[in-house]
Image (cartoon, rainbow, N blue to C red; front, side, top):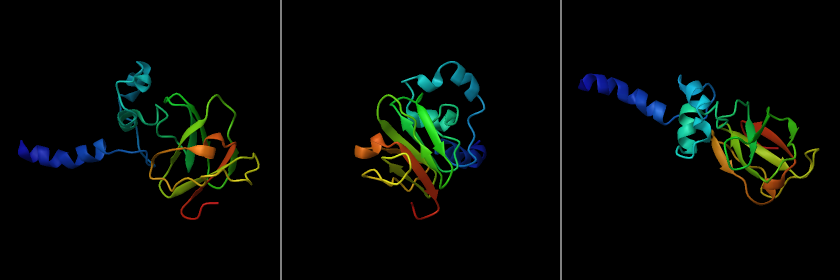
Length: 153
């Protein structure tokens, strides 16, 4: 019995410490849980939702660089950008609240649609595959550019 546990323990640690990383997959029962409201339950923390159903609950965006979120719940607007592209952030109700960045990626947030005037507090990152809370002028940005692997723009 001890031998089985010793063999499974490293696998359990990897599963429990799962973050939003490239190539991650949701738990095989996630589709059932999502259908019964798992993503919107306040009983579970965002970390638990991210661990088991990160992609389905929009807590692990499927992006090549980063994503911007508006709102305080997991059912929020999610604007994703490929590396080095200036992307408009659609108008919505309430401020931008957080960004998700893949490891080594940074996000510049702009106060103009052309991406020429940086918001105070920008760029954000580099990312670690987790969420970064936005504050100040970054919460009212209207466009963004995501860069990975070093220097932000």
